[in-house]
Image 1 (cartoon, helix red, strand yellow):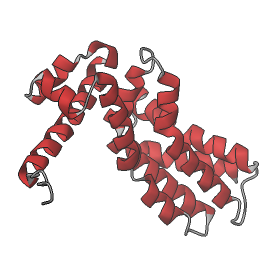
Image 2 (cartoon, rainbow, N blue to C red):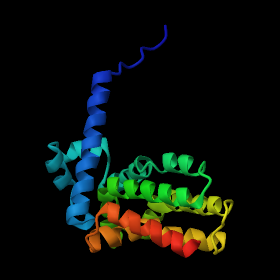
Image 3 (cartoon, helix red, strand yellow):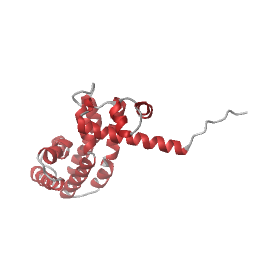
Image 4 (cartoon, rainbow, N blue to C red):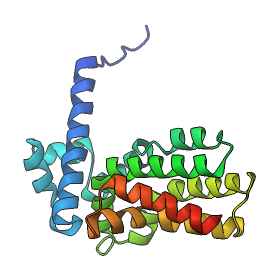
Length: 203
């Protein structure tokens, strides 16, 4: 006689998934507001309305929580959809507009995630590698956009590598943050400026 398979309750699984999602949501907000180093698992548990034991059982340590925030942020940024649409465009102007709209929406939607990661960099034992993991897909997407621009007419006046660096300078998270957070621009104002600047410089 075959051994009995353990019963798995769909409702229990759904409840566990909701708890994990809430833990990550509140942890992201707390890291962004207070700084990663000043937030404890107990703080996250209190904000979520569960025990610290539940946090550890559901997600893990504070470091595990941050790792999951990074991974979720990459997926939720929507960069794949932006790139799929962008690589079908056949004019430099259209590409820059799509790039500005896509990265602007991604940075606005993922602002709290970026801030949570940023606050961890000075105190995380491997902060540089953490930021690189969080941004590698983003940076490669802009490099793909640079390569695509060089297939169009007219091509940028800089090399592919230099074009990729400039796109990162303008449309990477630091460029958006400098204009919107540090200088108080609206996202729409920043988007318009970045498109004009990129077009004037590259072409």
